[in-house]
Length: 403
Image 1 (cartoon, one colour):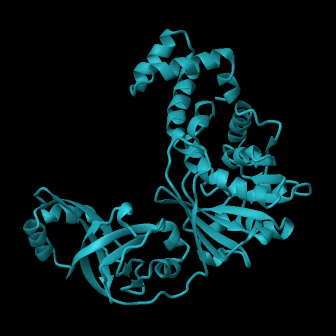
Image 2 (tube, one colour):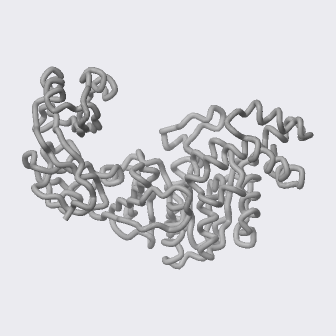
Image 3 (cartoon, one colour):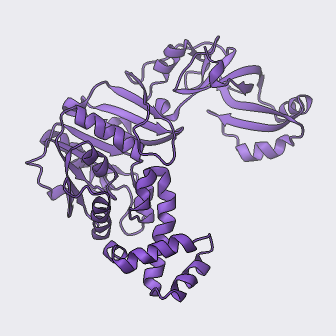
């Protein structure tokens, strides 16, 4: 159903009624809306939007209350905190007119407009484009954002001073994820060539993007929010600052305010120092690992790797850092289920957190096999040291105890 129908007085009444009726039983809520005189298709559309709006609060905060969504569009949309930070960086770089190619539901266009940037947004899917126009109007940004339904490869870039492109990474017919960049929409050849047409270009990509695809001279950034790596971004031309950046944002549901930012920068693939297991072990944030900045992180906390292929960092003393968790190592043992089970029994451990890198063990199965019983809690780190499987028995170091 087109969003224009939900924006009519009857549609707004249906949304209000759906918000009041939705208590988890969608069938009962739909029946209630129909009894209230709403047509079945309008009742269904209103209930769907109410459900999606409630889920969207985690990404869009209060804006979600007036926006329109599809399930796939919401899943792929940029989080408001990430979009706001990107928009601020574009604004500070002097960008005033931006082409948003593959704008989706408009998260990045909205953030850019709120920084005073004029946005020419292009979306191939007509239904998604209609939703984006409704979102732009609902947020009163239609004087700064124009939304065009069309092919991004045919967009006129002659009057923009920067480009943002978020190529679709799902098959249009099946909705399944695609991993071959040639199957992106628009395809990778076009996306990678944008910086030759408009030097100030930013590309938003999946966190698992191949490092070999990073354009020459570009800054490659990986962003995590609340511990989840949400995207990679390639900053091209004059927008590039450093070779690699890992940006860690706090996970603050329900807010669109620009949060505090922690950024680790450096050169990628620099080897870290290798040594033995020490008193403390750090589990670096996923953005650090994805950006290949584990060596830079190790240098920052004065640590080493116990295995050159495993991204756990070991140090003699804890240090404050926003780039990973710190745990105190209580004991280290070669992995043996029998011995580990006996140790858990001896320590009266009934609750475990299990972390792993470099281990093929199934965490859920191990949890069952340990037959835990007792009042104590413990963190288990399954990893390798010098190629051999080991288990670290640990307890988390509270952030307030880092010094």
